[in-house]
Image 1 (cartoon, rainbow, N blue to C red):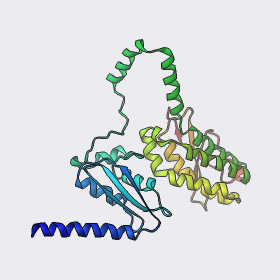
Image 2: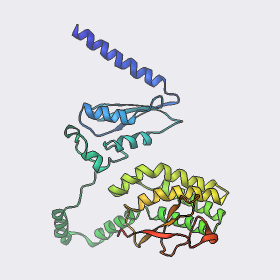
Image 3: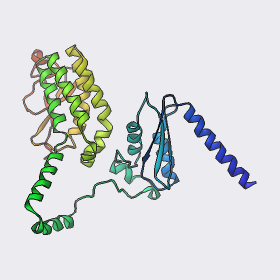
Length: 294
């Protein structure tokens, strides 16, 4: 009887999986490695990834391989893996936030093989001790590579500031062109090279950041561009708070915009130049915060 019950259970699970897959239109299947330990991990991973009639995730705790079936016209693998990472599970493309991972049950604390090792005092001392045996040319090459990877988001911020400056001048054409450059900069970011905090925030805001930049790029009306710029600035503020900057950045606020609800923006200059009103109320606003992350 027990064996019959087990067989029936397996059949039920298989039929459920087949039925779920059948309900997904434009179905595409992919496999990806997701780190975890136990049945509790499996439940959390699949719950985070699944979206009714859009995505189904089936994770194997022994192989750590997840089979993802999704509607290719409604979503993609990255969106599913982001949700799973935000639930606490590292995967091939996205790392879980440290605070979320820390809150997982003890049995779910898998080995974080993909997470960069934190630099310790002992490691730093070992590196200094080894410097004497290093080839100066090799060290120069390594340092250059590190320098190139470090300011990965600088182009994104520079293009954001260019959009802001165009809106200050009430130049819809320039705003559109600069926003198009911002879209390119966002899409060029290699997420695996971001610092841990940057990586976490980037996962949360990347979709909205791209969508808002694209809206400004195609908009012809400067008032519409300004509405979207307010949303763009919210996400950009989250990102710049965790990124290193060569010079201070000023988080500024206009209390008049949007029928008195107000709106914020980022600027490299302390002097207020309002992107929401331009010359009509150029100096309307104040500095709310100075961001100085070096």
